[in-house]
Amino acid sequence: MRIWLIGACSALAIAGAGFAGLYFWPIGKPVELEAAQGNPQRGAYLARMSGCIACHTDFEGAGKPLAGGLKLPTDFGTFYSPNLTTDRENGIGAWTVEDFAKAVRQGISPQGEPYYPSFPYPFYAKLSDQDVADLWAAFQTVPPVAEVSKAHEMLPPFNIRSGLKVWRGVFFDQKPFQPDPDRSDAWNRGKYIVEGPAHCGACHTPRNFLGARQAEQYLHGAEKLPDGGKSPPITSASLKEAGWTISSLSYALQTGVMLDGDVFGGSMGEVVRDGTAFMSEEDRKAIATYLLEREQ
Image (cartoon, rainbow, N blue to C red; front, side, top):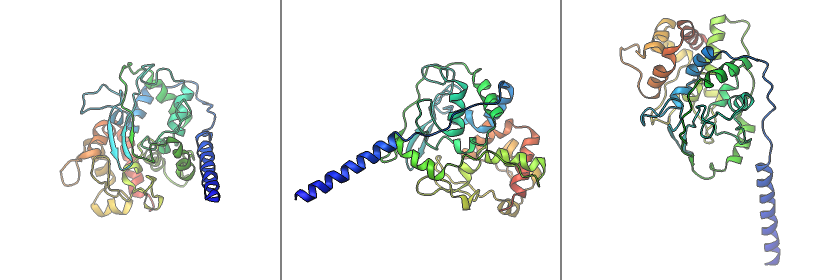
């Protein structure tokens, strides 16, 4: 009995030490932005491209733009998007540009806590210093809204935020965007948009039991989206088989009208309404070019 107690106490001590080590495990890298001046107009365009307004505005609840509160139910619990206005208490008004850069590209809060990957920072890691500076300049023009977003309602053990440090170590790829010198400017621009700010793979790639995207199934479609629906594959082969061309896909991203005359519904309808409809024709064609000419 005594030996059993000693063993149990030892196991608890080891577990406690492991949890403490995980809690105090430092994450993130120091931020030094090379871009000194941001362009708010370009930043506002990039924010549309990145889905900021769509995800941080509770349209159904008549919420104010970027004040957060949008409900995102998942198998891991329910997320609520935070307030991104310039309110100092409830939004990001007390942040520095370095805080913003670390949050957007590294997924780390100003307090040093890891964000849940419902915030698509693994995609935003592709943003350049200038992109971040432009976004920051744009967000500085947003009027403050003194509204607190709801706290996440996570199921155990996913409510232990420190565990995200392990998730990051296994699944978070922080490599910056690298253009392909053998491809056209349009193709590379489309690659940047799809793999970066537009984060198409967030909805069009299946995930494993820990919520990480399955790289070998990139853009092959996914089920169990937060709106209860599923996304179709948008690989080059599947798009061509369905009859899409660069022209028709670009038009669909502008209007939401599909090949059969019907319109996108669900979350894709929102992507068009709040994002791609505001993009330039050149950028919509770049997306279509990359998707249709991308090797599987």
